Image 1 (cartoon, rainbow, N blue to C red):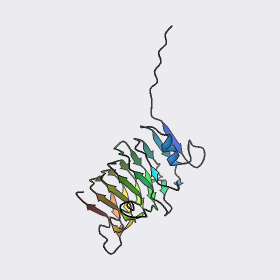
Image 2: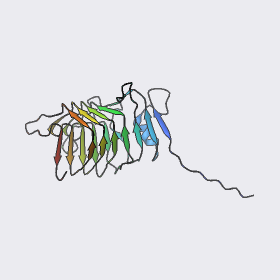
Image 3: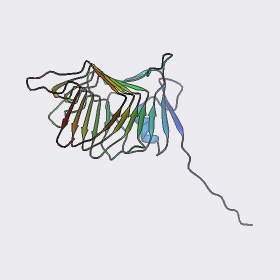
Length: 205
């Protein structure tokens, strides 16, 4: 008798929460994920202690909504580090949705000091839907810094983010993001040469 078997890889949903889930750490869940997987977060505040790096994987990092339809899964940088980074050629299949990205800080020397909430670099162009960036700060791009990267954003909000140099909400360097139905409010570029409180487009952006 000759038996044949085939194994077909299928996407998995990986859960992350303080207790009772597959993981308690988002970065640990990313390390264990494969392309196509969904990392499902609870309605909690996550203090990862370091930036969350998707490692070039085509995965979905998904939060939940509250009763009024607002994101209720909070990624908090605690004012000590950047919250999110894509730097490994992520494409549209790397998806962030229903998230609050707050209290991120990008420090150090330019250009590494860009993007307190999120930094997309080296041709990394993820998809973001219904995400809120708030109270993030950096030298440039308090909410988001794009360097040679063109993410797609829809139904996102940038509020109360700040930059010392420019682009309180978003700073684009050699980047052309697609931004649809997004709201920018109360962002600022505060330094002596500050410009683009909501957004600064620079160098062929």
